[in-house]
Image (cartoon, one colour):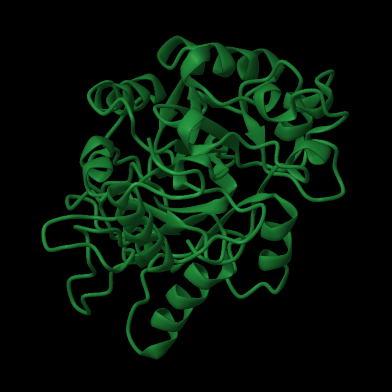
Length: 345
């Protein structure tokens, strides 16, 4: 038996080695999560695509709208390349939600119906069960009825139909809803300002949805649903509203973005716009988007789809050759010792 107060030599050696190993690691400050898995999802940053479904129709070149001259890979291919957020334009035609840009003029799409697009995402998710959370923004297009009488503006019943469709593809246990985030807080806004977002560990394998519109469709969707109680989608909101959780702020230079990120909101911004990638300004905008802390950085030029003439692409740096970084620890509100750390290479 060892004399009291003395360590076995082997134990003493182990303690010294462990102390040296710990000393060589960056130290987390008080209150910071010890592992990335325990970070809240609003403390992370993801790549997204703008009009993620879009396919340019080479048979219908439209010189009046050069900004429509781009095509994206199918949604599952984008997921393989590291995209974790999509934007889908919805057109309510003949009683179903279809996915395309402009009726009659620009209808090229990798997923003709929303159900088809969601099922493509679900099949990929089924084989990648611990994927980072996938967000999907929906924009309800307004000009459709003026161009095609079969397209209607969704009414309250259609929005209820949309909620049911979403849950029919990704069931409740695979969906992050406003109820999950709000918890017992009085309002959704109160919840996100007090760490209501789920941890990465609990959000893996799940999706969540954002209704992009802020006009009457948002009011129809939120009517009789205070703080989105019982609803499937979050909404594009602002900090004055009780349902504030997700914001769309497309200008990455908006000085309010870092402040709102630190306050707990989940924000989408755009790293580029209008397919313009020549000169220093597009690269500066891309840098501003990443630095802003907006959790979704959206682009027309994700990994695998660099602009042909300039090579412009929006991606997280640091991935080994042949790999991608689908996310990283947020540079604004993530723990200082972890900021910029890649997720799931």
